[in-house]
Image (tube, rainbow, N blue to C red; front, side):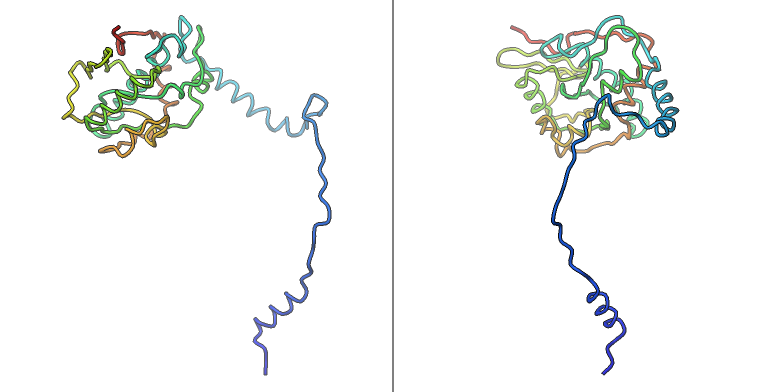
Length: 248
């Protein structure tokens, strides 16, 4: 009886295989410090790209006459207000062109602001430090009850989450008054809210963004919107205003 050729090859291969066992593992600690000599050949390859990156990151985009930070208020901040307004200004034309609709307001998260904008020239590097993540801007359509959840979150959280100037929220001890684009909030109306893909997934416990009536991707990164705004604005001015106030 003749063994099929493929089976014969299998027998040959398996019979030649030998078992190997690991008997010992050794490790060596290498300290990364000034005693390590750079590899000049690698440095010479990297140098042109490093110079190019340094020039790009150092490009002056705009100017701010004062420090802009996220801790100069309680329910809002100068930098948070700027972030929300920048995103609205740059994203709304995109949204109108793509979907023939308008954004009603913006809500971002306090923790998403990763740096300050110090007084003086604003560079590309400042923009990257401000928003180091690859978050995409997205518009979600929320029913009135979801906007009520959004407002309840802002009030309970007591944090300066970035909200754009289209919002006027007055908070008193047992109630609140909300206007959006100058009109009194209507629970029977749906609202188109600009946020980012991280918050859309319920980041920072913003669960009201989950499962919206509709979502509208913009294919526009937050960082790119910030950079575009800086490029289009000679001097950056931002302050705490009346978009969120607490009435004692």
